Length: 339
Image (cartoon, rainbow, N blue to C red):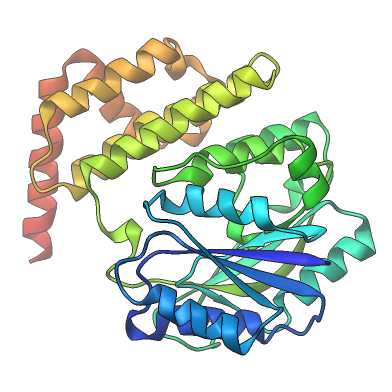
């Protein structure tokens, strides 16, 4: 089998979202591939939709399911265990790809000898193949034969995993998988996985369509999701420690942890929650300081974290309450000006 495409599915039947994704997969321009759709204990009729594809495309579509919701990481792990392909790809079940998506990625792999291949993506708000806002998923300085410097860049900025295909033997040999039962599982897995591949190439086209809609995970901020991002950052450090990457990539992990656990979570929480809790804000500050006490001295932090964010974080270091009140007042003033 040339390629296994793993599709984690949870409650995506409405508005034809799941059908649009699956239609784009069954109509790929390659022949030797399998689609492994994993129903993550959906409560709508997603499983029935998947079964209809399994019946219609027998031999191409396989459907797996289990009784308890394990989030995307659990579904992807089930798919990995069942996959027989030489290459592995992932796709979110509310997104879709061009008909020649996998043909072009596999072609780039054959042409270059790469063991990991990616592309760019298009942000869209409707189901069509009209290209919207194009986003570069990885940068040219991350591609080619992967040395220590390029691995550092991929660890900090791995890019989305659904925009790549991976050599399956690398995954199996190194027992690569995903955290289960949390959101943002890719925040851990993407960085860890990237350190095991030796040659990364890109197809510089937006072949993947990322669907932005009101029900998307990114549009709903909850403390649970914030805690999941914190947990993903903790798991990243734990995995790197177990796998011997903590010491050689310490500055990069210091920065990546600080960014995920603290910086992104802090400002997402403060902006997205109607009633943010001061205790949670304090917990974030204490947590990053416990893991990486000198994070603000990290050269990556100084360069990559915005100056405004650094000033606000410095304010919080002096007083959680001062930061909390100042930020809430600034946010209120901004919203009043926008009315």
